[in-house]
Amino acid sequence: MAGLVALAACLVGPGPTAQAAVPDSPAVSYTNPIAEQRADPHIFKHTDGYYYFTATVPAYDRIVLRRATTIQGLKTAAETTIWTKHASGVMGAHIWAPEIHFIDGKWYVYFAAGATNDIWAIRMYVLEGTGANPLTATWAEKGQIKTQWESFSLDATTFVVNGVRYLSWAQRDPSVDNNTDVYLARMSSPWAITGTPVRLTRPTYAWETVGYKVNEGPAVIQRGGKVFMSYSASATDSNYCLGLLSASASADLLNPASWTKSPTPVFTSNAATGQYGPGHNSFTVSEDGKSDILVYHDRDYKDITGDPLNDPNRRTRVQKLYWKADGTPDFGIPVADGVTPQRLSSYNFPDRFVRHYDYRARVDANVSPLADSQFRTVAGLAGSGTVSLESANFPGYYLRSNASFEVRLEKNDGTARFASDATFHRRAGLADSAGVSYESYASAGRYLRHYTYLLYTQPVSTATDRADATFYGQ
Image (cartoon, rainbow, N blue to C red; front, top):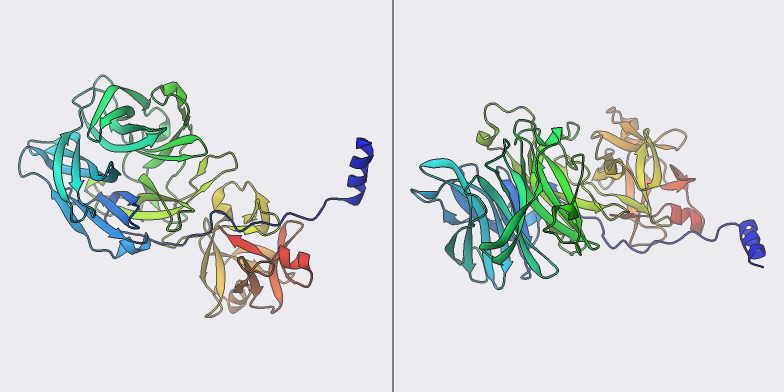
């Protein structure tokens, strides 16, 4: 009997395609850069509705804070200096990589500093702030975070897993010929660790050892019972990049064997988008709390004269962090300056996204590389009130409907014909007004839609047509 039912199902064919719910993580839009000449950025979203932003300033002489109710608002927010380096002795030079956290009702800023008599005697220090607003709080120095050695150490960050607070940081092992490894320990207070620290990663891969042998700048994000720690590697020029460690949240995080290290970098320079040396990141969340946001610095040029540490032009940038089907983060590429791109998922095939493949536009699941499915919504090439869809990883290339109404990714040749073919009217979704549909500017009544998973501009008349022509921004 079961076999007859199965046979009948095959003869009838598949049932109606699934209808997508509005995505749990809708598209976000920011305009980069967020802050010029601000490196090692850290953005913390507090329960008071404000984002708090701190970063390294080029003079390496103070700690600054900004706050705004939106991430974009941090760009123009007033900046307050909450602490200045000492005139002599420790904490008198190289004020680097501050992070701000709120722990047990007080504010804490973790930072690194050298001494006036030895600017490379970099150690980690903590400030404690009392007051609702850290820009006006009363700040007290809690001193140095003592570790297993008195050696070059920096980039402290703190996080909680299953009720246990940890500190992770970068430090030089005096017995090894490299620069820094990444370590982890439990905390006994917001300014002290307890127990024996463990090393989570040492720079051994070629991409971790360009210029300097560096693993530094740990940052943690948790999702789906997993703990992910990004870190920065190599010299702070265009070779700077991000690596990734992964562990189960239920594992013993102080056992290095609990962590898996990616053999390849997860975020690197991109000549096409003009972004070089992306690194020293942090994570925050979007204003609606539904998207994870990657915060990092980079430069918009490759070649640097002299020591990269003396080059002031690392900028703070943000973009959406996506997640793969297997639950791991997908960093994508550092996107071009200006408006950040988004992804367009199919209304009736929720796991499929608009993407380009060999310059043909289509909808696919599990798109790799991610940037093949990212497009910037920019002002229409053909006129005001319209939009064009520019490729994230091929800037200057746009989705264009050709003479056969096939949609392809093509380079803008500057002609009026190209502009017309690559321009759309953005409409409320034909199958769901919460989505979006794109009507061709050149051929009124024709909409961008998928058919056998390929994209065309075609007339729409049936419910299936309208479903095929509806997308959600993600």
